[in-house]
Structure formats: structure tokens, C-alpha cells
Image (cartoon, rainbow, N blue to C red; front, side, top):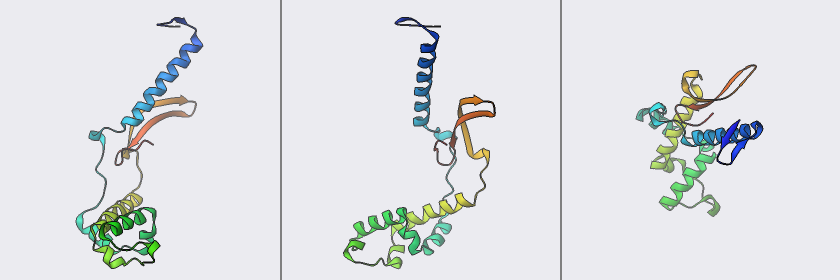
Length: 149
């Protein structure tokens, strides 16, 4: 039985109140994310790997959502005509821009992440969420991104 400011509350309402308080704590834990001290540095690769990846950029990668966003930012900054104005993208000209290095860094990271075998050491268990007959469920964060999973 829970005794609060409003007096005695029956057991059912106390459990609902406790669950809503626990849910508020869960929301705060997810918003707070993984503390910086527990995060691993992302595997962006060294400068040489980024330059090699930059030289290998393809039209398909530039047409991806991230590629399109970065190419449009480059076009706006450099004053190059956009696709809507009928201009074809000069890939070699784009490869010389700082924006292409940014895209190459993220593609290098993507390649590294996809080639890595997933292990439990890449995750941090933050708090238990529940228990069942088959095991327990935990709020966990991926160490290299800090994202809740």
C-alpha cells in the first residue's frame, strides 16, 4: 500500500503510479544516452583510407540520400548549377571539394561497421527493463554511436 500526499492509495493505483514513474525514468535514461566516458571512438579510418575512399566515389553513392545532401550543399557553396537547372554533376570536380572528404569519411566508417562482427562488448547495458520466463530485457546503448538499442 502506498501512502502519498493525498492519503492512502489502493494497491492497484500505487502500481500504476510506480509504473508511470519508472517509465519517466526510462525516458530520461534514453534521452541522457550513453555517458561520453563509456563511448568508443568511431572507426572513421586514417587519412590515407579516407583519401582512397574519396578517389573511389561512385555516381550511385552520390545519388544516395546522404550523397545527395552533401552534393547539394557543395553546389550551394560553390555556386554550381543544381540538377533542377539541368546540370550534370562533374564527379571529378566534386572529388576535389571538402564535402567529398566528409562523404568519404562516413563511407569509410560505413564500410568498417559492415565488415565488423557484432559482439556483446560493443554494447553497454544501462538498466533492466523487465524479466520473463525466457530471460531479461535491458536498455542498452551501442558504444560507438551512443544510440539506444
